[in-house]
Image (cartoon, rainbow, N blue to C red):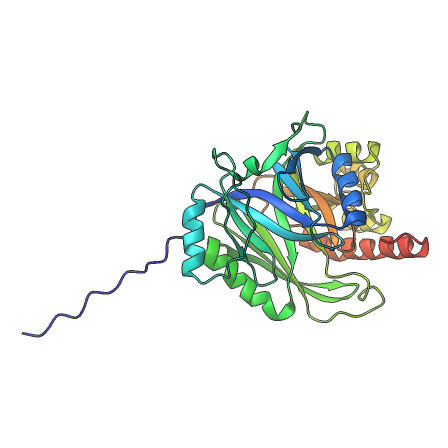
Length: 346
């Protein structure tokens, strides 16, 4: 009788956790950029609701969108970390360990949450969190306020755009696929003021966690030495025009969109004149896919590389307004050049 083959060993790697969105995004700031970012957050309706118990980290919140400002380093505003909301952060940490994701050391006080973080290929720290838990990460903060009334319509973080070293672009895709099951959804190559940009969107099947991975093939031009590859935090809003009005009233640094963008938009899409006028008045970008629409507006660059975006997507729209990216990048370049000409350190 032939011997039976040995049973196939089952994988000991825990399954990918189901992401439930972003728990927070953390911006590394210095004294100058921290003031600028905090002022912009306040102008966009965020409230400073807490201070970390043992670190120079502020907690800002509006709706379910939470932004941490970490002043422990010397960065002129950059996305240093983000946290994935999941019902099983321990399982996510075990999966990261099994996949040999590089664990990051973390100084933790006696009464602070035991959070696990790993390093993405670009150095971004990725945390696993359960915000509503009794021992959750919010307990690390001394709360001094609440998010307050909904003034601008911001509800959550829609997506993050992370600049990737070009030689780590595919590695980053594999990292997020392995860790969270995020699959590539859109790929594009865009002409930027500083060279060709490769952009890839990755998301989970339910589209609760959206990331844009951007990499520059070759940097060139006068803007390149002064401005690192930009990153942005996109906040979801239920009414982009309401958001735009409040931003204007509060003096937020909204990016000026060139008039010829709207002339081209009208020629291509033949929009309703009232809608086109509202887009033009409020510096709002527009895209659509069939009947599904996407509205978005941006701030100027904060510090040296970060900006905020405010997006309203209708059901069925799963893109990121990629067709508008070259215009947005050119507008940021123009704003940066004006700031340098006026002596502002933008």
